[in-house]
Length: 181
Image 1 (cartoon, rainbow, N blue to C red):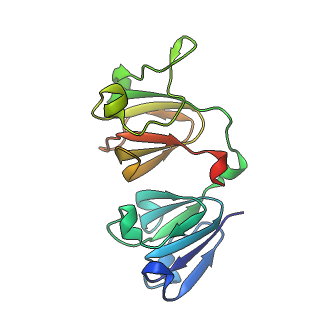
Image 2: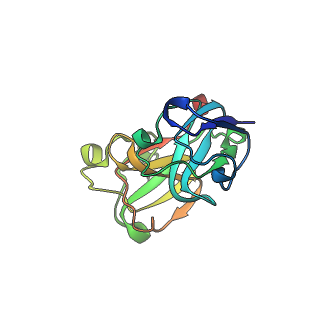
Image 3: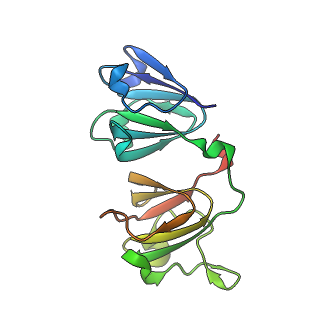
């Protein structure tokens, strides 16, 4: 079971709210929320109520200022991340340069299939791609980021086909590892 504490002010100030499950609207408990501590587990935080808007994946640790995470506003809702119970030992993903699995596909090889099997801090540096616009996650859980070096807005991916990212373009990605819990 995960546990996170939200604080009204930056640097863990003001009133707090302890949470160990999903919360669709943090404003029911706090007037605003600018910092948090994750005591255990992982959570996906959102900048809008009802799990909408930009996603921010947080693991055990301290987050003294949501603005330093790239948020334009404060935390509004959160989901406890259940993958802690189903962590994968295998990570495989095909990424594509264009939507609908178009353009070039990742050139990393695993047997005879082109596959992504590890983290990539910059598609441009490693593959000379300006971005990634579709993917097929075959195994594991992944985070993709709009900017190189795991920065900017992010999105979470689990096994499945993703033909389009709703206008987002990604430039780096990493695996969600069991060592994060």
